Image (cartoon, rainbow over all chains, first blue to last red; front, top):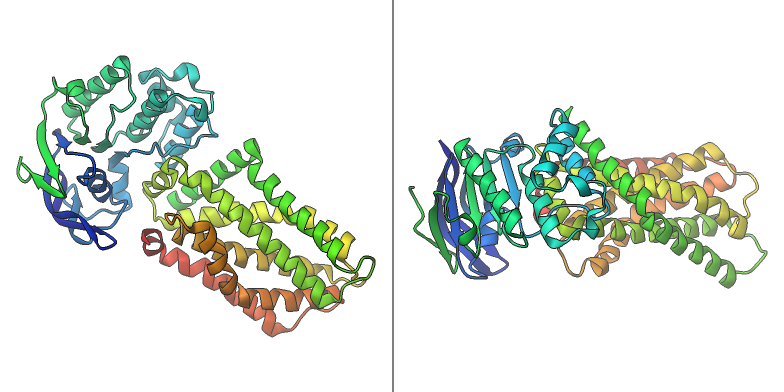
Length: 213
Length: 223
């Protein structure tokens, strides 16, 4: 099953075209590594794929359909910002997102995620005091909390130490086995090189190696 | 049902953060109190203001303090891109607008509870206040102001000129509301209830700015 499809996607910011007719298909259970230089349009492509910014032209589909509010339960997004509130604790942040997604058994699930990313000891601390790496772990937990079937990750390894990178790679392996499609933007390939993945390259808003898997 | 659950979650989050930091409340209230103090200094001390001037100054005060807190409230949504997290919730995105209206309404109403008696003590001269009308116009006027403010903060969320754009957009748009609330408030300060036409203006304004941004929120958020 197709988790994500982009068809002829053009995105202009003001008068500048950032994406030029991007075609991309991502299957369930597939990991796609989206590589590219700074300013090539990777983050914009993720925002478009997440329906956080509208396309200028073209079509985005999640699981074969146009993005809807209901389908947002099936996608998880990590961008360069964490989407977290600095004044709230790690636990409160995740509980808040669990409420937004209407998850059952919020407390248990949140504690599991905090434990998975080794944040359970700091769960009562306002995250404005967190290091970059801790905040990144929490942001990943936030993106995965509702167990999405399509995961869009922008530089997920950024700021993570060796232990954090290993946890994330193991989690990606688990997701792949469970049939989750992952679109991953990263400068470095080393942390996940032992996973099975397909590589695409974005250069000046044009995608190379895209299309059919 | 999911919409309401999400709405309560968002409002609860705002209240929790405000309760913890009190930044918004203390800064807005301090600003408003300072304005009352300055008005007391520059206006003729000891002399009661005419009811229309009293009402007009009160509403300007509320709107300026409200604008101040609207800008501050948005800072936390811009921090770490948290607004995008709200946009990912599996409900209609207008929930973000309504949560913002409710949270901000609560902040401004609490501020008014402190501000209005103090303002009356310093500058008020009304002896025969129609309290029911006064409280109602305060509530309806605040709802209208908060609704239009929440819409404009959504429009200007990604703009680097937001703090300049907000007053430039907000105050002209709030003119009909300001006229209505000042007319009615002035009447209530002299024991009357105000003309029906002005009540209708306020009510229509509230309905317009509560309903329209909700319907158009996807477009507003994309600007």
